[in-house]
Structures are given as C-alpha cells and as structure tokens.
Image (cartoon, rainbow, N blue to C red; front, top):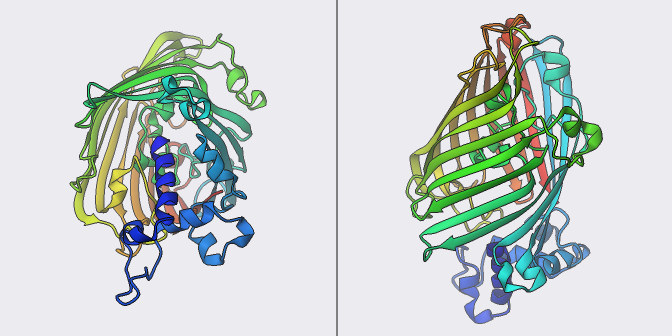
Amino acid sequence: MKKLLALALASLAASAALGIQREYFIGVEYDDISEMPVNHGAQYYDNVIKNKYLWELTFDEWFNGPNFSGGWVGMRRKLENRGFVPVITYLGNFASNPVGGNHRSATNTSAVHIGYGIDLAEVTQIPELKGWQLINAWSWRFGNSLTREYIGNTFNVQQNYGGQSMLLSSLYLSYNSEILDGEYEIMLKFGRIAAGDNFMTKPIYWMYQNNAFDGNPVGAFNQTRLSAYPGSTWGAMAQISDSEGRYFKAGVYQINTARQDSLGMHGLDWSFNGDGVNSNYEIGWNINHDGSGKSPGNISAGVIASWYNAPHRDNPMASSPFNCTIYFQADYMIWNMGYIKRGEPYYIVRESEKYRDLRGIILWGVFQYDPYENLAYMPYFANGGLLFNAPFESRADDVICFGVAYGKYSDKLPTSERNSYEMIFELNYKYQINRFAFVQPNVQFVLNPCGGKYSDALVLGMQYGIAF
C-alpha cells in the first residue's frame, strides 16, 4: 500500500515540474521537433484523473484512467494520500451449454466486491504502526449456476458462483516488515480471513472462468474442510521469505459450523464454537520474481491438516477425527520474449505479478491428494495449463489461457459417480479493454459430467469485469 501511495505522490510532483518532462513520460514516443509526447503514458492519466472532477474529463482522459468512476470528485486522491485505499469491482460470468448436460440453458452470475485497506501509520500518524494495515471487504453475489441447475457436473463453469448473498469476506489486521537488513521479510495476518486466500493461490489461477482453476485448485475443497472466498472464519497466518524468493508460511483457521457459513448470517456469526480446526503449511520458492527480466517461476508444496468429525463416504454414521490434503504446485515461463511495451496508457502497473511484465508462455501444474480416500469425495485432483502473456506486442495486458483439470471420485461413494472421474478443458482470451475493464470469451468442455451421469457438455462463456 505504501508503494502505491508513494507512486501517486511521485506522479503529482512530476507533473508540476516541466523541466523533468521526459522523465515523467518515460516509455512514451516523442515528437522530434516539439519534444512533446505523442501518446501519454499511464501516469499522465493517473494525474489528470486525480486532479479533475469526473464531468471535467474528456472521453480520452476518462477511458484511459485507472477507474470507471474517475477520482470521485477528488475524494479518491485525498483518501489515498491519507492512507485509505478503497476498492470496488464487478465481475460477471455468462455461460451457456448448447450441447450436452442435463438440460440446455444459459445463465449469468455476478459478484460485486467492495473493500478498503487502511495504512494505520499513515492514518494515525503513529510511526510505531508502520507496516500495519486493516483490511475489510464485502462480497455480494447473485445469479444462478449453469453447473448446478442445468449441466449437473461437479466443477462449476462459473467461478464466481457460491455464497449468493451479501457476505463479510474479510476483516483482519496485517503486518509486513523487512528484517536483518532487508535479507528477510515477514508477513502476519489475523482476524476474519479465509484459508484459500493465503494458501494454494497464485495470480495464474485467476485467469480462468471455470472454478476448477480459478482462485484455488478446487480439488482440496472436495477432499477436506477448508474456508475460501467469499466466506471467512477466525484465523491467523505467518510467512517469512528471503531475498532469493524462498518462503515458508503456516496458518491456523477455525472450521465453521453450517450456521456460521449460512447465507442468512452474512458472515457475521463470529462465535468461536466451530466444527474443528484447520492448519496449513506451505514451503516454496518464487524464482526470478525480482524484476531482472529472467524467466519467472514457482515451485511449492504444502499440507492441509484438518481436525473435525469427518464422515466416512461408505458409512455416514461413522467418522474420523482427522483428514488432510497434500499438494504440489509449479509454474515456469518456458518461452521468454522479453519486456512488454509499457508506455501505453492501458498498461497496468503490478506489484506482485512479475510474470505480467514479460511476454511469453508459462507452463503450470498442480497435484492434490487426500490419503484418507474413505473421507474424500474426490481424493485425486490435478490441473495445469499454458498461459501466453501479451500474445501481441501491442496488447500488453491480454492473455491467452488453456487449462485442463481432472478429478477422480472416491471408490467408497455410494452414488453413481463412484470410482469415476470428471475432466474440464478451457480455452479463453482475456482482452483488456483499458485499465478498468476487460472481457474474456471462453470455450469449455465438460467430459464425463458427474462421473458420466450426464452427457458431455460444450460450454460457451464470457467473463467480464469493471473496476470502479
């Protein structure tokens, strides 16, 4: 957050100094005679948006700004300068199945995310609070699921379905600090959070519409009890990482009761009488996430350990007190085409997604396994795919994505999917219209829905989003 605030302040200072105009418009093409920029860069539009009312903006200034709603009559800049950063987004998932499934139909699911982050040192002007932040977010989801209502398969073809209500999705304190002369960095979180927001998650996974990929590889949620967005629970986690990208993190989370997770409670049942405890551990290495231009990658492994009354699949009257999932993740840019063109107004500055600064193809894969096959609905799960970042040099923020997911049902199930499988294939193109809007047409194929209970389905989809 401090980096974002610093960037905003630096932009304002630069705009006031004509003598350093070329530095301000770094990466932009200039006219040889006037030495004025032919095309403005993203920082120029950031500065314009923050210093004009919405109705004063030209279409070009509004369209190339970072937010649909502009600078909120100057309030957005004032809030950010005081350490309060608001976020409002809308995400839609349209899907239809012209072929296959239980019934043919089409649905649209919607998700509105409203949140804010507070830099406590900036807001209170207390230096001792440096590194501390308060995060609060709410989710409002609505719409019917094509998977649930019409196809009948397991892996939802619309990733933003689930928790169809207004829910408190997070309310927690976080702390970030460098230690030992910058050789290590620590991160702490505690409060109302979700385990899935801190473990088994990468920006790569967010590039798909099918829930088998998006957010978290979904196999773990068919193996053990695990909290995920938009839900939240009591939890705490800690991470330590070194300057070479190696890290270890651990977290402990309450397993909510059905009442605590019910839509009618809206995430506001904060009692401590949960169904059990979930403890997660992950060790990994973020390779070349240093802005060096070398091919970035990641390799990591983890375990999800859960203590609760886990019912047996072949005898629901029996239960076991412990269950767990073991997982492995890896990704690497196998074809590095160098830095993308970053001077265009649509270029999005990112702090944590280093691979998005490079053109190239990324190969990724995940494997999840629950050794207690009598407790898991789907003890084996694997997915993977390819991402082509910036497939066209002039389209810095576009991505082509292909993914395959496979889940094997337990042979202990009493239902028809016993010892069978379901597979998902997805091909999509994310077209970044500008910095605040995108559309992502996609084609999905559902093979062996619900273990063959229904016919294979072809799904035509569209994911789209706006940042307000």
